[in-house]
Amino acid sequence: MPLVKIEIIEGKTNDYKNAVLEGVHQALVNSLGIPDSDRFGRLYELPFNNFEYPPDRSMNVTIIEITMFKGRSLKAKRDLYQSIVNILGKNPGIDGQDIMIILNEPPLENWGVRGGKPASEVDFDFDIDV
Image 1 (cartoon, rainbow, N blue to C red):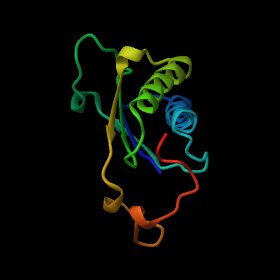
Image 2 (image 1 turned 90 degrees about the horizontal axis):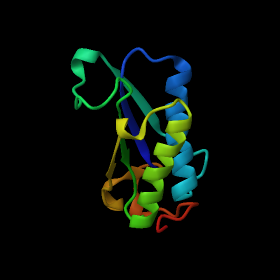
Image 3 (image 1 turned 135 degrees about the vertical axis):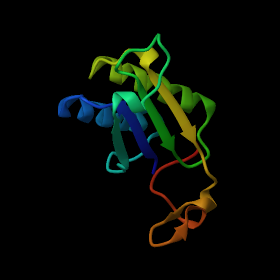
């Protein structure tokens, strides 16, 4: 049940924004094996003057924060990073240098899910340890 937060500079088309949301989700499905229906994505557009980034990046700079359950291996995380860059490189055409990905992994007991239960007490229908 990863929670995805994406920040971009405002002014992109709806097709562009949908491709970013869908691309990140598809990378999570491919790399971590989450169910396709497990979608918690948010895309924030910031005005140009509210978004600082290094001068060697383009206006397509994209910050992706993923908060997810602890337990994924370094290999799974590497696969996720590469999958996001590859998918977004194809559609909507974001250069990999313009993508920054940050993973946050709070312990399972810090997630309240499925009617207010700690995630550490819930049997999920997908593997966390990949």
